Length: 364
Ligand SMILES: NC(=O)c1ccc[n+]([C@@H]2O[C@H](COP(=O)([O-])OP(=O)(O)OC[C@H]3O[C@@H](n4cnc5c(N)ncnc54)[C@H](O)[C@@H]3O)[C@@H](O)[C@H]2O)c1
Image 1: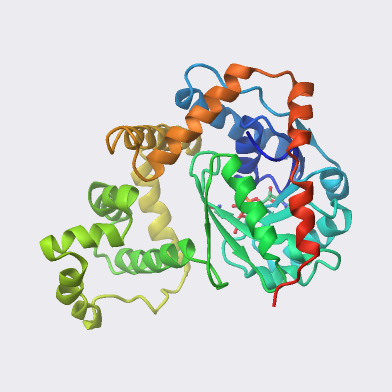
Image 2: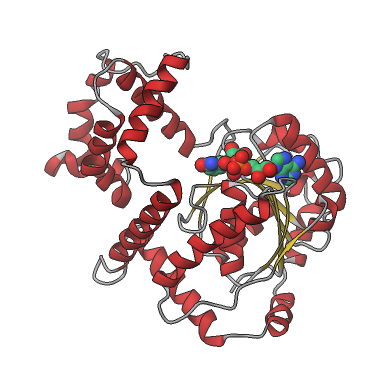
């Protein structure tokens, strides 16, 4: 059961709509603000996909969905929210404007999460004049309604208690919060992804492989390993009986050979953009983005479902969490509370006390 009663989503694009879907499907009411006149249509498209995926995850029926309201202003959206997730475009000036407005109008004890892919929370919270201590980065991965990971990052002014409450909130909607120990740009996930993407661009630009061949190399090979064990545990096993030490002795020195172009960035000129976009069109074989989204979602649900049966039925990695999450959703569905009863119940466990704590103790 979630510890939040009402959430607000500021920005309803790819990521904002994904948050809206996860929250609503957990039975939480959401108020959203997005100035795009197409926002409502776009969010309902994402909701369709998310409902479809969740029906596969919980075949016995889903919990009563939360209510979605489109607000006319940020002030209206955040007015009575106890959790706010900002997902506006990745520009610091815009984040400043939006966070300042959220901070002015949100209840003092509401936790504010930012979906930013790489901006440091310290650089964002300077715009929050009232309660910068309640800002955390809550960096999700697309599709937010299915992928459980959320990287939590605190800034210089963030109170440790705010991080704790944010962890509880994200976990209560089926996510796996990982708190990043030191604040850096792009955190951990996007550092890794950017390094791999930069290298991939060189490989395409230099004609070593096409985008389809590169994706095949990932999805038929190490991508399968990454999804269930990550990088280091896979390498431990690859070291044979001597494990990680042997692996490092064997492959560590190779890192000094000039194998990668990692630090250089290829120029994003028309030629490179055309090359990649054309090859990507060929790879799609006429499938639309919405069709590809369905395929992606079905595959993700199937992978997590398969992993949930591993490890003597206890589940492994994301599968262990998936098992708990689908059980939690099924339990919520079995209760089928009316909207008002659900609201009453959520009120009792509203994180007001906890979220108020941060104001008493300042970090550093
Ligand atoms: N796309 C990804 O894979 C991904 C993954 C993780 C995090 N993020 C981060 O999430 C955030 C949003 O990215 P996205 O991919 O959803 O972008 P997007 O362009 O799909 O959506 C952004 C939305 O914000 C809306 N918007 C613009 N100005 C606004 C304002 N003043 N108030 C409210 N809404 C406003 C736009 O109308 C749009 O709908 C960025 O910080 C991005 O770095 C993106």
